[in-house]
Length: 245
Image (cartoon, rainbow, N blue to C red; front, top):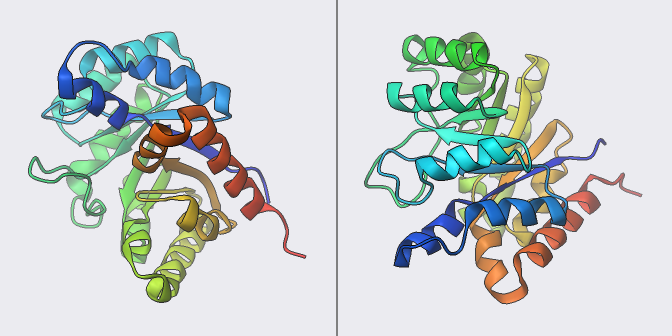
């Protein structure tokens, strides 16, 4: 299987900075370390309430282009305008509620086709690859294709949160969704809640070409350093992609 792309979400570098204010730790510095550690892109979610990543962070990440920028965003006029101004390599449209601590589920692409289709078209016209963050459900995958997205990012949260003995059914849903999406011509990405323990089984799904991982690695960096945490994740993923003997 081909080498899987690894995107590192640096939202919670900004969370730590914002806890005290000021400029440290700097998400742009984190992006440079992602490149050193073998990451392929940087993911950053500009939320409506700016709870972590800021407008200045997006501007700096896009301007410096240390690595391709994957901008996570809600499908709002404000976020579309920002994305079209900075033209990140990729935009991942996610659901967003102010009350949630983190993204709690996938986008309802099937129920929001009329709203999402022009958003996707505008972002693609600006030059960004567009993915939709969806639960691993066939109806959502088919809707993403109809809407005109380039890719889907499969929400792995239910799999990661399940007790180990209950994960197989969630893995099978991810496998089925990945197969469906690939057959429809979509790129298949995955992410949310992945750790060293849970990532290998997802990385082994042959249709998945990109993983985006953040919170776990920022937390692990406290103990071992950011570069070392990412390098270990890269190793676990690469090992999972090797042919089984």
